[in-house]
Amino acid sequence: MISVVIPIHNEEPAILPLYDRLTVVLESLQKPYEIVFVDDASTDRSFDLLANLVETDARLKVVRLRRNFGQTAALSAGFDEAQGEVIVSLDGDLQHDPQDLPALLAKIDEGYDIASGWRKNRVDNALTRRLPSRVANWLMAKISGLHLRDFGTTFKAYRAEILKDVHLYGELHRFIPALAAFYGARVAEVPIRNVPRPAGTSHYGLGRTLHVLFDLITIKFLLSYFTRPMHFFGKLGLLGTALGGLVLAYLAVFKLLGGELVAQHGPLMVAGALLFLSGLSMFTTGLLGEILMRTYFESQGRRIYAVREVRSKRQPKVAEGGGAR
Image (cartoon, rainbow, N blue to C red; front, side, top):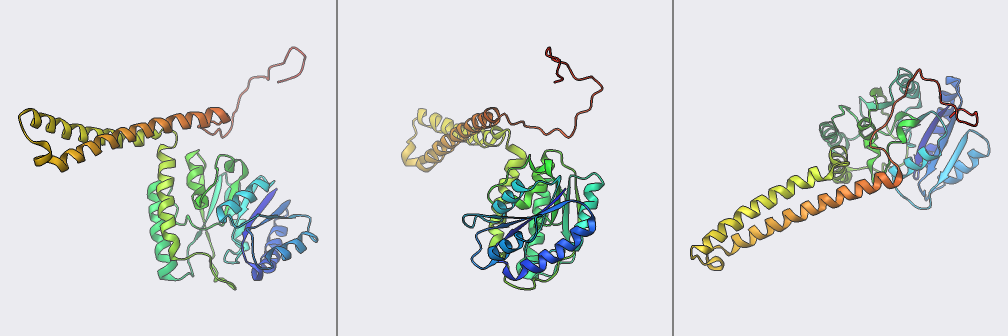
């Protein structure tokens, strides 16, 4: 079954046209499907329209969040409710053409775990949207090691089991392919159309660039040091402790030779002490991080790996009671 997850926030004018276009495409696939709308606490009549649609279509599900949690949380709620083996996500503002959905699904049928949309010909404002997006995508590709040309689009198709290994929070939804690739997911990029927004105003702007920068720092740490935080904090701690130790050793020798520390090297003494103490703090942070990671994985029974499949010619063992196990 195919599940289509659509986060909604104040998209009243787009809901009915999107539903009509999407159902036409899904019906043409001749596969079982469901549509999951997630209303992220809209203040217009979006939820009322969705509630009316639910009464007429058994394949439609509407999730209403208590308050506006943001797009990442809305997507996560939709993923949790989805029942399909393949999950497709797209925006609810009609800038994603449902006619591109079969192309994404075709990549999944080819054996890929994620089919990510690529807005090859963007229609957004060149200064406030396209230029920052191009810079952000380049940085994301360099940091994550996953060479996609469009991380930002929501229009993607996933195998459902892939999403089980990805836990979303903050605004990390754009990094799902990178996070999934960390666990070995196979990712393909599919050109999609980018049409002008027919109504309403965009919820994104130039101000989100700073948020993306913070997310880049977060994703770099998660991909490189999540299971080994000491490798990150330990390097900084070693550098700070070594530099601080050298400065303090020099000052100790200087004092033993009869020098006056405060009068001649007061600022250097303070800098050496700060470097040494900050280095020790980094070591302590790294050790605490290692303990937290061990607690996280062991207490929840989580694994630091993901299995694609297991094949064996051995027969299943039979318990003493006669049942296979």
